[in-house]
Image (cartoon, rainbow, N blue to C red; front, side, top):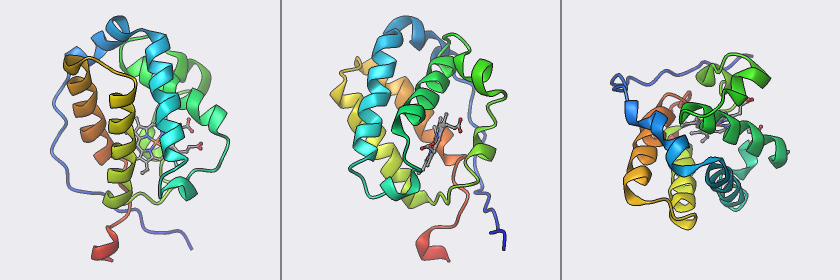
Length: 143
Ligand code: HEM
C-alpha cells in the first residue's frame, strides 16, 4: 500500500538573494569538494541505509543542483529536468530526526572544507530551511 505522505506546517522561506552570489564567491571546485565530503560523512552516518548506493551519481546530482541554486550554470535542470525536490524525495521516508542527521553531515562538511564564515552562514540558513520541506514522514515519537 502507498504510504501517507506527511506535510509539515512550515513558515514560508524568505527570499535569499545573497544565495545566488555564492557560486561566484566559492567557485565550482569548492562546491564539488563540499558535496564529496558531505557524502563521505553520510556513508558513515546512521541514515546511510536510506541511500540507494551509487554515490558517484548521487554526488553529481547533489553538486549540480547546489551549483545551480547558488547562481551557477543550470547543470541540474539541463540534465534532469525540473527540480521538484520535494517530489523527488517522496520515495524516501524523511523524518525530522533523519533531516537533522543529514544537516549535521552538511554542517560538518562545511567545517571541513573551510568555507569562510559569511558564506557558511548563508549556506547553513539555506540548507536548514530548505531541508524542512523535504520532511515527508512524522517523527518516530509522533507515530
Ligand atoms: C536542502 C535540502 C536538500 C536538498 C537541496 C537535496 C538535494 C538532493 C538532490 C539534488 C538529489 C538528487 C535527486 C535526483 O536527481 O534524483 C537528492 C537525493 C537524495 N536526497 Fe536529498 N536533498 C535535501 C534534503 C535531503 C534530506 C533532509 C534527506 C534525508 C534525510 C535527503 C535524502 C536524499 C536521498 C536518500 C537521495 C537519493 C540519493 C541517491 O540517489 O543515492 N535529502 N537530494
